[in-house]
Length: 299
Image (cartoon, rainbow, N blue to C red; front, side, top):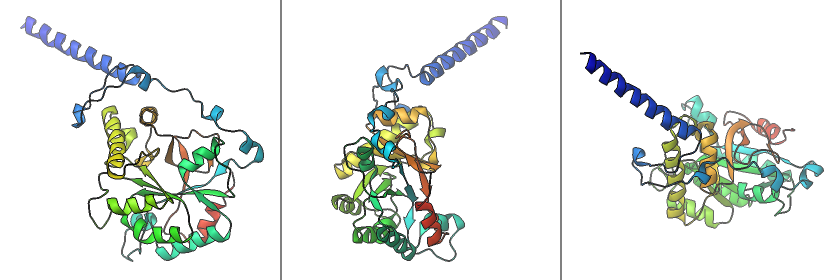
């Protein structure tokens, strides 16, 4: 009996040591290889240099002249769907959905008041000094890839020649449903030259709450989906539910992302980490004046 107890204790001790060893290597990012078999994906080998935190150089590589001119702040607006909202819709649906007439009024205001909608890719190039700083820049982002963005928002955006960004939940793109955009619809907007296509993971998971293998899978998979569907390499990302952590940022860097949007409220700043950009939520329950107040927000 005593021998059996010793065997059980030794087995338990070995298990604990293995667990501590594995946690240490994940948390310290010193692993040489990570298998994605746990999430039923092919194996990818990641060398140490992928996992070592990159130097925080964005403040160095970006130009200082815009700081000197006082034009470093840019509002990044967070939309979801644009669609006629049913009266019996939930409060959550109403908050995430902009009525097309209200959306038209919003875009008309931006047009008449000299705003210049740009993409995140363009914003990155502007902040690096590779593109001229436009008059009153603003970024219009649309999360999820809802079909209403193509059916209702896109014609209005095209009317004003406004640039914009869509963040796709790639699992649903091209599923031929009434809720999400088809591959052809996304391709049409992309080919117009107005639209930047970004990603929003494959399954809309909270990366902050996900194990590291799931983080890798979700970012790698959605990136590959966009490449396969559109022959396009995304460089902008949006964190589902606003959830992020250090590992998520490092994985995004490893797969070539340069800009990422959060749900942190506020104006984007030249001095911000480009993978942690704040945004301003546009609530469908609010009126045009609330929108005007938000786009004219001062730092």
